[in-house]
Length: 146
Image 1 (cartoon, rainbow, N blue to C red):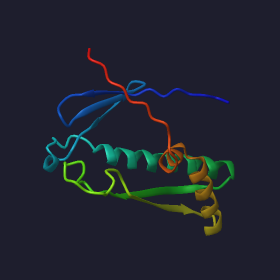
Image 2: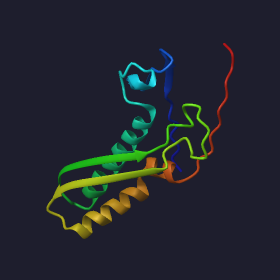
Image 3: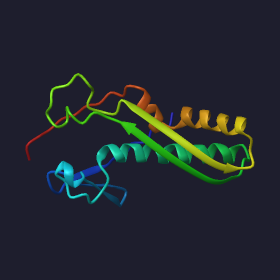
């Protein structure tokens, strides 16, 4: 087994804007103005969907390469549905997170549809982000006063 420890640091810059970094790379996560943010970056949920899209793209291309399938272009549109009421403090039975995610992959290639379907199936099975979205992962959260 080859275990990798991932580490990300998030620094709250304002009530809605967070600078997130790892390995010398930084991004800004923020809320749109209508949610009280400054709209300087994507929302956390948009970040999740972006990460999912990127992971499927990387995994898809790796599998295609292993199968000697040439990919001329790969475009992924990922959408998600969520009810924002609970986050805003409104009582609801709806979950606070995404309750539907739809990932659409457009591929330019000489391969046939059956081959592309097989690659996508394999990418879904091998994508770590898909695994974390589809399966429960133990989470430990703690806080301390500094």
